[in-house]
Image 1 (cartoon, rainbow, N blue to C red):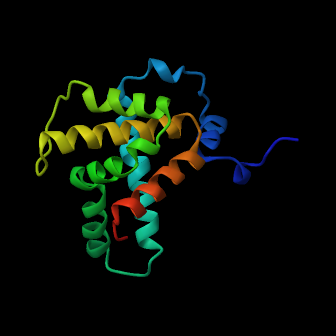
Image 2: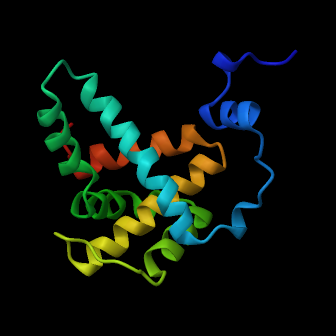
Image 3: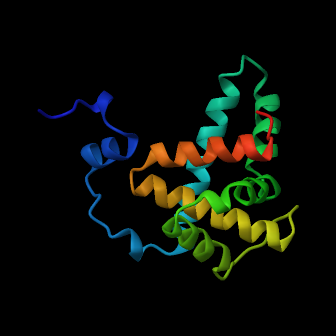
Length: 149
């Protein structure tokens, strides 16, 4: 029996409605994974912040940017790196060590690289359709790094 759209993951819904989904994840560059991971991580954080209660949009934005910035992402990955699988550590390292074509406005190069690796891992897990694992890692990181939502 086929699942209805409401019972499918967002990625499965995208593939079902628009097609696609047959690409080997190993063919994606770390920066492409980070490009996708950036928005997926931000969507998780925005959802968590919005669900804390009604606030002005600029307050929501300020709070979100404190968490999705390179410094906080570096803290998050530092807090959970040892708990990652070997495969996940490899994806993170590939993202962290890739040649960057831009720099962060308000972050050290080290934090920016770690954040890129973290976002690459998020993008990889999303495109692998393993949101359960990504949610586990994000929750564990937020708790271990004591990041306030």
